[in-house]
Length: 553
Image (cartoon, rainbow, N blue to C red; front, top):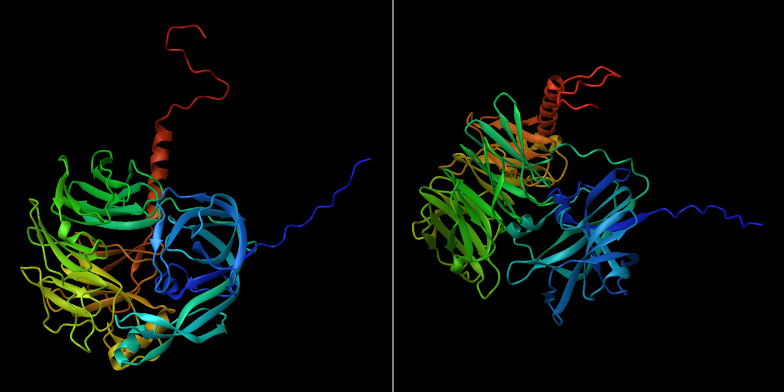
């Protein structure tokens, strides 16, 4: 006699995810809507079991190869933190904790929004509940917003449109402000449709030169060149999968670089790796690439030549922006560690001479705010350093001259495209003051923009290089963009769905055209396959092709 076992239905899979507001504002996550499917990168942050919002989970933990890092909390004893990768039922996640672990584990903490899909895991689920957490903040002595304990509220919403009031509060000079700090969503991991197939290419960066537009994938070592008649040539970089890369087009080919090194792709040849050092920022002048690392040695690259080392030790740090300028390059570097904290400009000539400027972040006078500390980009003629809303002319000795120029609102990305400056920012939330309609020309245009876009309302702005006055602004969907201009003067921007394309003269708040790069690549592959099929000999069914070797079958 055999035992009969009734099938037991698996319990529904769900997750409560804490998403910092800035990850909704910057587009890492779409604004959560109850009933919609939400996808995004996540990490698991270990907390004490006494945390009322904590959950205890079981998953498989694979440690990373990284050394533990030391975290010094604002108050308390420094702690070592180990990192790893968790695999659970219906999700994967990066993980950081104060206890070294491996294998099947049980840990307590929060699911939180992660920074990138490559470095963290991912989750996909249907939103069944959404709450916005609001906390009171005040500015400390360094101008940073810190949470005031005891002032926390939670509100239920159908759609989590969040608001960041920090800039408005700073300008108004208030002592504190109640700000949305995170969105807490409950996800049903079962009630989701099958994942669609990944497109053949997901544009991650774009660059144009000599009549050719080059596009690299967000994660694949795939590079394509699109000519004026929409013909597509496909190149495969000899690099890793999962590495975001930047690209820089030159007349004879294209440079590409990321954490796994630098690559050169000639128009009429195959891609080759020219260096295995990670490159985090760069620019081209002529056919020469300046590759900036996070350490004290940068490099100049030229096709067919060995890289040239550049010692920038006094300015070693994070490169926020680098542009070609005259007979070389100018970069802005923020230093955080090793006893060096501050902001410096660096000039590099095409022959390899390095000039490092002084620290720009002097302690301000009483009652004045710190300047030249964050939100950097370089643009304009004469070349300016933009930091937050401050705009300063860069002098020959790499100091900054303040002529009183200001941006109307803080921008979170920017740079130079052709002769123009560009930046990406958000329109003000709520009812704007007269100053807050910037960068749009008037309230009428601002109101039209609010009807076109849901919060956070992201716009890309072009600037007159001489005055740094806004020339036009266009609505923008998708990640922080890669921006270029082709020989015809068309501005090309990586956006959701492909490349946004528009002339510099486009009317304010007009949707740009979208170039579907995946469709162009798919058509090119189909034409190539059709041509190969037509050139291949067709054998009649049931017949053996003739033997041309002279041997008996």
